Image (cartoon, rainbow, N blue to C red; front, side, top):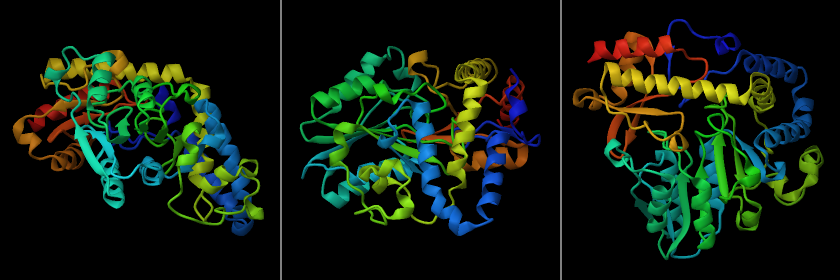
Length: 392
């Protein structure tokens, strides 16, 4: 299948950075244009009609993720959703928040801020992040590492489902089981999972899961969600208030069948809801094209990338992992003179060579990060490697 026929691909750039933002299918962009034009015909009435429509969107997303729609809430990105949970969940006094040294900087800062605000301690433990540490890596070894890191004061564990640098996929269900046994809240940063693997919230054992829809799902920019396990709903409190905090005014009664908890968590202020309405278009795209086909293509491109780098550049790959531990991101160790450039390298490749890639700081060292999506080709990867040879 030629996935590129569904996208407006810019011929002037090689885009291999879907880990930051993916390219939307043409149908999604058209949906946003049509919705915004329709909205502007009567903005006031369109706003009042918004929340019934948003509930329909939330139901459709829940169906795609096999979740209860009343356990979801829509947000503009994963950072906002993670703020909602980490800042709002009840945690015992003088307890500890635990994170790994592979976490995304913004989410790490949320944990740090919550710890400072609530006079809690924040502790970081080490996860495998270098090729030499992957020799005997397995789900069991990762679970054991996490289990050993949990301490008597740990009240909240926050980990990525797929780490933002190397793409290491953690066995979150097995980790969640241990946390549940120890009465530890487990929050998951799932920014790089939906759209890169099958997600089923009916079998999700963690306490909270936040994600974006504008990365691997290829959804509208500025869309994401949070999901909370029913067993901890009563421990989660909003850090802000608004129209639906105490009672549900008339314009909002079309949302969630007037469920008080869901109403409190929806976006109840004036807002550009156009990207959220287009979520239904990206779900239709996945249903029409086929989830299995997209995921299969991602894996093909990833394997081709690893093999091509080994043959042509001989850079160490941090992402050559067993399939059950592998996400959609591919990180490579840079030569020393390029590693020192960090973001300057990304800008150089974009401006001088029309190659858009990412860079990632993994445990203190900058790496090249490639993130191919189904609309990419082997030829683009080959051209990218030729460019990197020139830069060397």
